[in-house]
Image 1 (tube, rainbow, N blue to C red):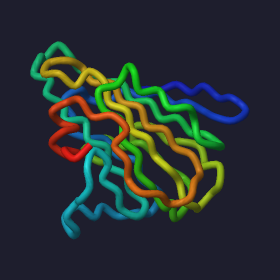
Image 2: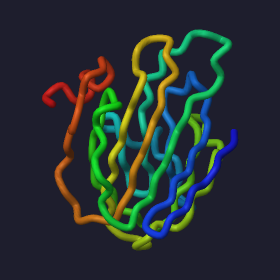
Image 3: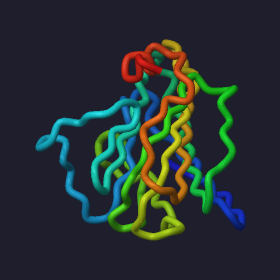
Image 4: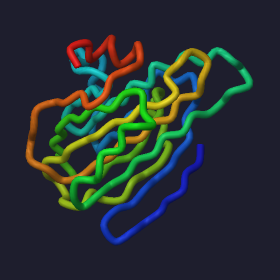
Length: 171
């Protein structure tokens, strides 16, 4: 897996590649143990536990020639503008960061990319998760935006895919 970084004065963007057939990827904080066998995961397209964010992809790629999918993580100092037009699903959730530092790992808990420290350190953050190309045998694209913010209710900003409707049917 590989990645690249674009850094601006108020934001940074990290693009990484994951296996196209992965059902999810995660962002984890250092020292957080894997809790999936201990506690049931609840939530929707984002499943959040202290120190761990699981991003569902709902991958339905069966074409063996397709090997990677694109994941972008953008970290902002303040709330970014919402871009919903090119996405199938967009949701927002709050996340309490215990350490202020996240890494992207794949569904097998293998490190894919280490992210820089979050701008407010250990604090409350808002997550906006965009999913695109969610049709069968299409390679999905995933964007997770992160910024410091007060805790707020979950929000389904746009839901059009079958995966989004499965987890966020009331949207």
